[in-house]
Amino acid sequence: SVEGSHVSPMRFGESGVARVREERAAHVDPGQGLRAEFSHQQGIECFRGSLTDVAGRFRTLLNKHSWEAFVRIGGDSPLLDHRLVERGIDLCQCQNFDIITNVFPRSFPSGQSVEIVKSDIFKKTYEKMGSNYHREHVTSFFYQQKSEFKIINFSSDADYSGVDLSIDTKKDYCILSQMINSMKKPHWDYDVYEIIELYRAATQKSLHEKKH
Picture 1 (tube, one colour):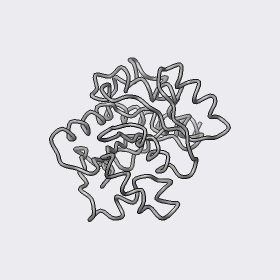
Picture 2: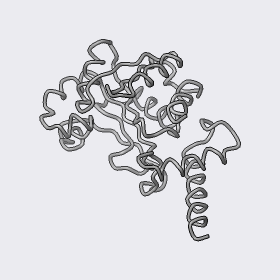
Picture 3: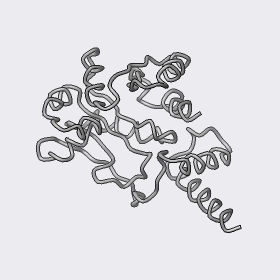
Picture 4: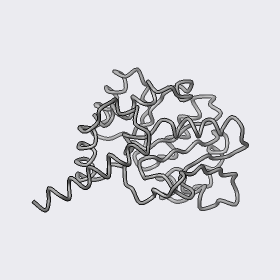
């Protein structure tokens, strides 16, 4: 499943993320029961909150725990390379930061986005997020007011920002399914560059099938 694929690399990869308590901030919607059940089956505590005030969801969760920082990963990114999360966490150990990211500017594909935010900075900044847009998109305020924060960005060796590895449409889902079906090893063993090659092969196959 898409949800399942999102859990596995964080759980079984040799990642610093394993040292971070896994807790899923899900929104309250008609499917919440299924998400809560899935999280329970995976041994992950599921925290639920507002559908639109996603930043508020994070703040409430952070108020429950004494975490120094948290990793934000989108649910539309089932093939996220856990090595990118590890890279961000490694930067945490040796850098003074408010937010560590690989999207400012973006050089990795969408669906491979990683953000690590200091908890105390986030809770203070939440009060400044006056618009619904910022509260829905969680970190957009940091980038809009970049001069107020210490933002560290890590980049790919080449620009892959035009590659779309996130799932937003039925077409995206079909491409993802083709990619997974072509895999010869567990998906978490593929790094981002191998995933890009799978994506290119799947999109080429899809174009060929349309022509015929």
